[in-house]
Each structure stands twice: as C-alpha cells, then as structure tokens.
Image (cartoon, rainbow, N blue to C red; front, side):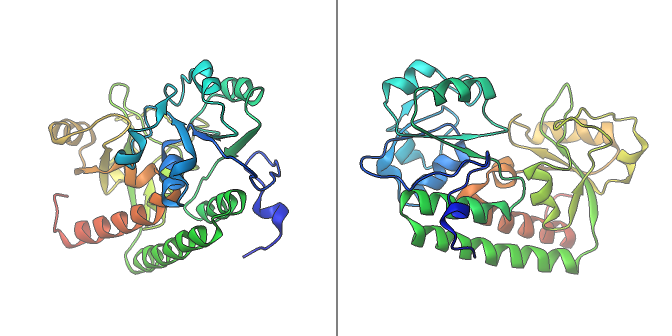
Length: 276
C-alpha cells in the first residue's frame, strides 16, 4: 500500500485533490459510488444523487434527485451548492461534467475497469474524506473475495460465455469493461469479438457463439427475465441463465459481494445445482 498523499489523492483524470476541509456537501452521479459513500460512513455529507442511485434505499430516498446519469439537470445540482461532485468516465457525459466543473469546486473523476481498481478507489475516498479506517476495511474485504474467486478460477477449467445487456438489438460488453474483468476473476471469459465498441451487437450467426458454454442474461440495464430464456436458447443454441447485473457491474463497496456472488454461481452451475 502506498502512503504517498499525492498518489492516494489522484483521481482517474490525473488530478491531485486536497483532503476535504470544512463543511462537505457531496452530489454523486454514480450509483455504485453513492452506495460506497454510505458504506464509508459519509451518508450525512451526501446532498444529491441520480435517479439510478437506489442503494441503500433508506438513505437515498431522503436525497434530492438531479436527473439520470446521462441527463443530469445542471440547475438542480447548482441549487444544492455541492462542494464535491462524484462522476465516472463511462457513466456520465463529458459535456455535462465540464459544465458542472464550472460551478462545483471539486469534481472527482473515477474509472474502475477491474475489481482490483477498487483498492485505489477506496483509498482515494478514504484520504479525501477522512475515512481511512473504513476504506481499509473495504480493502480487506475485497482482498479476501478476490483470493477466493481466483482460487476457484484456478481450480475449474476456463469457460467462454456470452453476457447480454440488451435485447433488440442484442448487445454484449467488450473485453475491457468492468463487467468482463469481474467475470474473468472467476474464470468466465466473455465473447466480445474484434470490435472497438464497448457495447457491441451480437451476431447470432457468428460460429463462435456455438463455442460458448452458456449465455448470461443480465437483469440490468435491460430487465431480462425468465420469459427471455427460451428465446435466447433458440437463437444461440446454447444454455441460457439469468445473472444479477448489479453484482457484475456495480463497483465500489459492492465489488466484494459481487465476486462472492459470481464464485457461488460458478460453483453451483459446475455442480448442476441451478438451471444451466
């Protein structure tokens, strides 16, 4: 672990921040990180969130909504007079963040791409908001979850899978996304194809589809359900299963729980304990 303050306080945009002083008012535009702020003991400093920030429910329902992750109402953010704004490179529009940077003193840019990236995220927020002990507890939990996931990955043969996030057009995720990296932690490698798109469309005629062990239908952002399984199995000619999208895509304090979920799912599928 580094103890260099400049390293600890550097965000994903390369900006070095000073530890927060005085009254702190945070608006979070990132659902995963709204949850993490609460788990770090910072709920009383949160004043605003997006409509997609739904965890923890008993806390976020008391916070002002400022729109969605992609359609933030700038005037609503300004009215809350935040000292800090939490954003993410993938989830928020660059133009919106640029506009908000002119009215919010401190904009914290995040971009975790692998489960391991959460260590730096925890320590950034810990150093920034004076909750280092809570951040280290999250680090310990993640370290244990990663160890268990990697042990399972090393014990079972690797499997290629297809992870679906949308229907008509059918869409998956690229190999360099957080979702793909989280799946890989337990030995599942998502079929992404040769594309620069982060969310490529799926060609059911692609012969590589026949090589995947199974197709996963995520519960978010498209709300796949049991009724979609026969349709996908007919299209892919492969077994299909539902998978909890939050557990695969939410980083921050959800990372360890997500890895435990995936490890348990992989074990259950390998043992034939759940629908293949």
